[in-house]
Length: 115
Image (cartoon, rainbow, N blue to C red; front, side, top):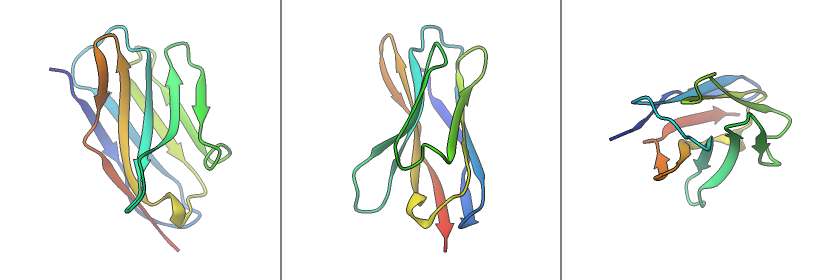
């Protein structure tokens, strides 16, 4: 069974940068898109950024000018570079993949931004 393994995250001060990454535990072909969602306490999970197999990205308006999503050439690892972090970015960040047999989710990694 394929799992999404996340790394990165942590506690930083406002204005800092942080990166998270996510890799499929096994070689996977046919991934259509990979991305990141986040869920803050008491809030619904929301899309942060997604990158399609062709490399085309989409961002939430709240992060568009601050975050950058990329993937490796094989397409089974996705990176999220987060710059100019704000306390409002504090959340559990979940990796997500769209595969031919369904959606995959990572276990989540905590990103905390102090003011």
